[in-house]
Image 1 (cartoon, rainbow, N blue to C red):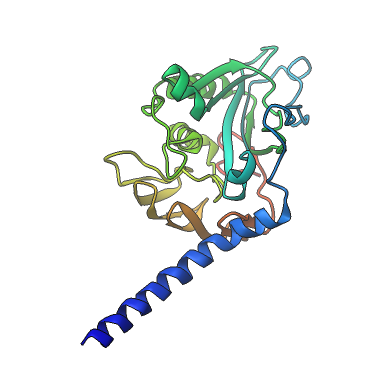
Image 2 (tube, helix red, strand yellow):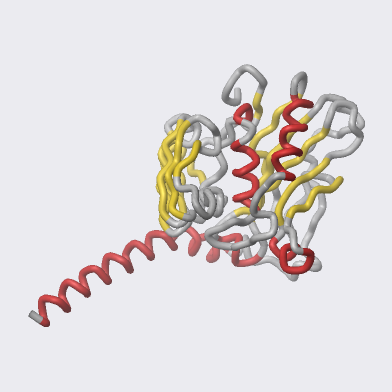
Length: 268
């Protein structure tokens, strides 16, 4: 009886260890490359990389969503995301994101300010996840601003599994279905639906997801494809973009076009 119990215990322990090893393979590979281990945050580059249209030359209204690897070891697991907007004829961008340290020192992590939106995130080069511009975008900018200011977890922050900066971005984007945004699998926290919400629309608005506090869940949607979330880390397949989604590594396959056009649905 005791031997049988021990065998069952060891078998389940082996399975748990195997799952953990699989989950950590991607982040481990990112750590081994050395790309995510940067310098001191005080000396890390915050220089812009010219992904944002020059507001003095481009008079159209613009919305952009960005992601960049998080600073230091955290970048092996995930990215930091933020939103940038520029109304018609505006000469500067407004950025929206959540900073964890701000919660500790000022009570709210929500940061809304005028800045170059395409700055490196403490050494990490950003990428544009979605870009929407032109007629009708001013209305969307107003909705983004209103949604950001209504974010319910601005005074809370949890690096894992949330609510964090990616929870904020996903919460706001859910209010803007025109973007049809598929956040990367490395946006840990995007699947945190709240303290008492376990089922909701997918971030893109093209399907649905179930999630238990961002720890375990599944998403099925036209834009996201099929995503399985274990311990906050995402595996998935996206037939629409011919991508695999892996923890730590992110997308494997062609890069999706970030361009969005009102009335056309997905990016083109």
